[in-house]
Image (tube, rainbow, N blue to C red; front, side):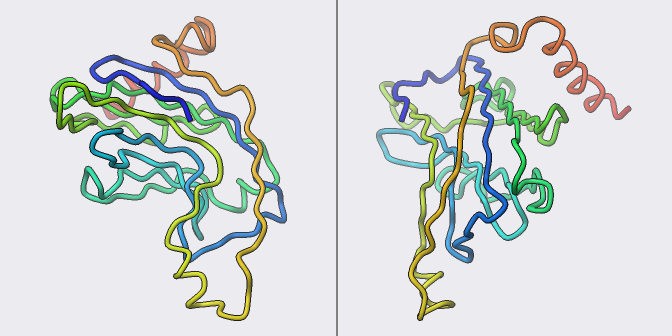
Length: 187
């Protein structure tokens, strides 16, 4: 858990994650791998989750209309390292907020609008990563004879900074940012 993330500031994050080929899914229960939460009140903003479809990006129903975007299928995800780059300006103003996600160097999400709902002036964010299970009753309802399976995941090179260049250097940042421009102009 990394606490005291600031809102209204642009931030870049990078994660490498690895789910083994024999990863034991707990679907239909939920499995969050990376998430950001507000601290007071306690609400989930976004999550990177593992689901039947693979790795997904979720703008969570605690704070936004629930939405899921498949970032990488299980076929490509399991047994391979995956690079996730997340760039945001946690901002309550729809003209200033945004969320962008690249997976293995390719842009997958480019959202502009409210990216943070601030309920009080002292509200802080926290970043959490690891295996966070929820709605385990769904698993038990479907598989009443089974125990929850053991799961493992590996993270490497986790980093969060105010600028892209501090994480990747100028050349890779230019390649990432060029994808934003292309997407905006429909090329």
